[in-house]
Length: 387
Image 1 (tube, rainbow, N blue to C red):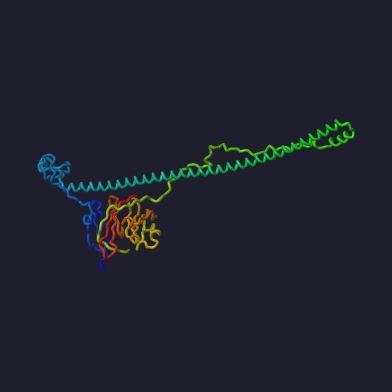
Image 2: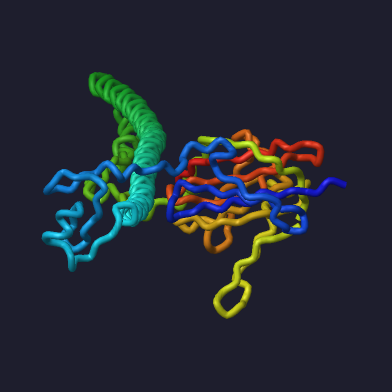
């Protein structure tokens, strides 16, 4: 059977531009080591020409560098003034200063990456604030409408009660008017009858009328008293405490949401690696050797396929990247082992990913295998990440 190959990435942070890729057999024996130039890389160390620099006094070439005076010097300069000074070749000093500049550049890359991270976090925080405050305004608007609806409903109920009270009073007044009208009619009739008796010349009618009208109870009948009790609306005039009814603003913290993480492939390479298989889990151990947490995959991703973490990295922001090769997924964990998010690598046209590394620019390098023993076209991808 043909051997199974694996690709491992090793980035030289000192030079930053040198990328070494080790191709190993299944037994871990080193098959070969290739550089970025051999897989299509563009960042290759270039030569520096140092034999065309004149000294600053005599304008002669083939100079040296005086570390004591920090200047280029020729043979005449050395004989006259620099015999006891610290002299060195231009190539040596140039290489040293190039290394210093590269280290500075690496630190600048890291600083820029941190600044970009801060900018991204600031923008994310700004977005969260705007969204949160917009949600608060929406809640106020909805609550306002709800209060309006409930107030209108209650006001209508009060109006209905007032209308019922008005009907009750009108009916009572109508009944009283009828009673008065009937009593008045009876009294006027008796008054007319008495007048007729008084105008009569018959003594018998006078005696009869005296007995009939004087014993009548109509004159002493009391009037029915109307009640002055009714209903009255008393408004709540303490509107300064409207917050007790409507609600108020209180201090709170922004809700914790999923981190905004971007993932974009910016470059890919081809190697001659084929397929492998290894069954693992991710375990974090403290300084005393005790297990802090263990991660065995996400049910949403590993429901039908087992969790096969092939490689693991920790970013400068503290995120843990786990390469799950069987499901073709990149799991992003917190330092506490909680899943933050995951990426389907196929969405970025990354398949059979096997190994990972992060360079000084914060770029993620993903090495892949070919997918079968009959193929030798494994890919190498450079991914720009944002957290």
